[in-house]
Length: 336
Ligand SMILES: C[S@@+](CC[C@H](N)C(=O)[O-])C[C@H]1O[C@@H](n2cnc3c(N)ncnc32)[C@H](O)[C@@H]1O
Image (cartoon, rainbow, N blue to C red; front, side, top):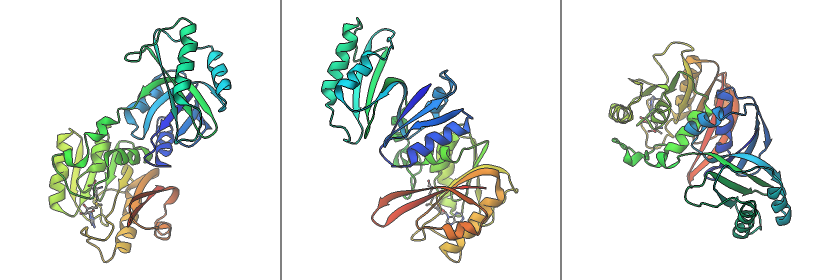
């Protein structure tokens, strides 16, 4: 079964990485079919809705998951032929939306919607824009047209309701919930997830909401109290510790994944000789407490490949996220 993930444009590489990590986490048999900008099409072995349902609850950087009926080129007449002959009959009413990804295509979306609507009208189906049974979708990417129908939509608004200033405790410097959730997914979490620089628990809340047992540490008591308020508010299963990330009171190989955003060395309190020392020592501790074969997502304001080399971790991915002129996050995905 071909599935298309309509990816969010908020980041160039994280949305695809999030989908792939989620698929691997649930041991889905799949291969990437095509991956044009803004969209990922996979060939999934399991033809049921099981995987789609699981991923819909997890993902934060995907808009829709589509069942793909046909993939073609960009010629308008060819697209209409493709739709006409795709052989799929909707079960009841339908709607049709055509979306051009990042202005790549010159095809008129309005005209296409009307023409495709006409095809199904001629076949005897009735359109219902408010509550259709089948929501057809045509995606126009840089050189392809992907036709199918929506199998599931991600409730991205739920993440907006958890923006930092809506939570019981707010302190600046927090990751936005959608980014935090994507990083949790990319870490391929298991039973226990650790954030040794947890601050107000932005990462831990997102992991906790997925039923993961979360463990947080910080050296500011005020922030730990705030983290507790936030974690209580969302009813998560958590443990918080007042501890230096360079000396974790956790057993060797006891956590399944780590996602963390250490201080960048400007205003944040650092209980270490230098930011370099803090990053190196905390990474060594994370390596020690993480189980073999598992992942850590570690953020830094600067490239730290040389430091990572000293810890035993293997760099699996690196994503750059520009926050503002003087802050670009380097998001490392590390494997033990
Ligand atoms: C960038 S903030 C983390 C923000 C967090 N992701 C959130 O969502 O609120 C970095 C945190 O590291 C903490 N910190 C600084 N030095 C530390 C150390 N040596 N051990 C543990 N935490 C430390 C700071 O108190 C701060 O809360």
